[in-house]
Length: 404
Image 1 (cartoon, helix red, strand yellow):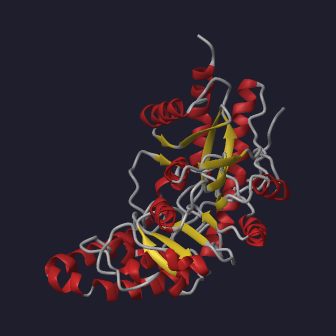
Image 2 (cartoon, one colour):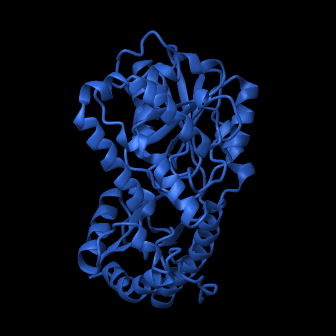
Image 3 (cartoon, one colour):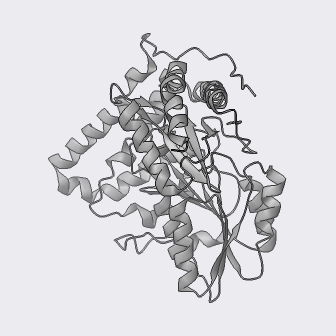
């Protein structure tokens, strides 16, 4: 059952004619196929952050005394990239911090239930369980098949909603399974029941031109992943009546204010990553174009997925392709051979082996007792990266999976 990859796109070059990778400072000798986990910061944004750090350390008193006012302007620039009003958005260190702020702020009652899915990011799920335990409630987990379409996802999630449901937590793009969920449709259905929704959009900025759906509720997104901002940069968007409940994770001098101004007072936290974020957005727009990134990521993802899945299939005789129902352009899933990475712990061991022995940085995930290779594509990736993986790493992984 051969799998045929489409023709590869031409690798991208800088305006000066160099490989796009030269705009990043990635380790030479490593092939980076896992942008979706920790991102990669362009050199221009790194340089901007270093300049800002030098200003901070040159006069800390002036810097920190004016930090809240600086953050108000910083929020405006980041909000423009996300295409949301600045007054609807606060900055946090990562999506999990935004999720936790929502969990800690909402007025849950005794016996409150939180609805989510079996695709939910582990830390987000554990936070929901913590809140449920505190209020003697429970977390209802909708089991969503990998190949479920939008209508089925909405049906399965809403089937878990009842009169005790206090919050629905739904991924916009799932981490372990690299698929999209119909968050706007779920938010609409939830609104009819009077249930607030928290959308985990950790992977959405950069991947989607309009990453924040138009609904009343909460959205969190990481800017250090596909949007390439310095790490520790994320956004929390809140609309509707529940936004006034939101308070920062740490009590500081923002207490006289409400969301989002209350989140602008962060004490001695180093906010240079937030301030340098727009340098990443602007660098990619000026040198490549965000629309061009999304087009290239899609074409390269099609090629990479077909090529690598085909290589596994040819060696095992088992179909390595995966139907994820609602695919995501720069994140692709390939099924690993049976017996490989079938638990969360094993997935880490397989990832480490691939890095140590073959110099490929990858994401190995587990869902439903099966192991998967999650491929990422970004501007600096080339068809040759995935060709090398198919040639060097795939045979070793097939061999590793064979019974001894």
